[in-house]
Image 1 (cartoon, rainbow, N blue to C red):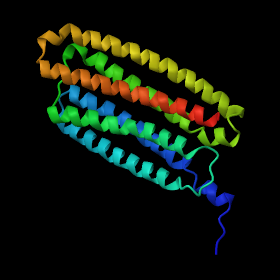
Image 2: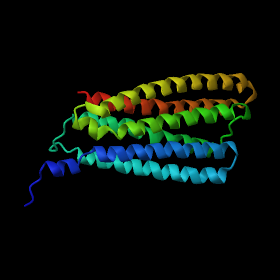
Image 3: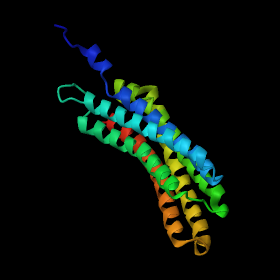
Image 4: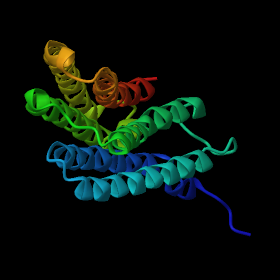
Length: 225
């Protein structure tokens, strides 16, 4: 009978699927930009294709989430509490789920972005993609962080990334405020139902940025315990 040793445990570490999950999440946010650009151009055929890509990526994220949870058996020795890792993967999984929700809502209603806010709307979404990319980079340091108990070069890079994330998120918050103000200025000229859904989409894009920042800080919190 084969004896399970530390090498086997390392191979079964849940951090591999977590890294893969974040890459999938980043890809879904990147595809959301393509989707929004197609929607702005009223190119719904391309938007449908992007929606399919987003849906496939969300399914991949679900598979990786399940794989991570499957590796967190109570008998597996881990340097951090099982609940912390479960919380981390739950936060990370909100990203592709939200992207799928946005694309589904927009394509279901064939939502048209008003010309006067198209530029600001796309800029807001692209900022969310940049934040997602930054946290994806942070996840790459997760093994090294735990290996050295949040010390060494990885810790320095992680702290730099957290500062960057906070700065990007603050900037994105201001962009959201400006975008809402632009929409408010023209909402009287739009169908009320359309306005409601536009605000909802803006809120969901903001949630992507919020979740990405939270993932970065959760990694830092777990590694420092």
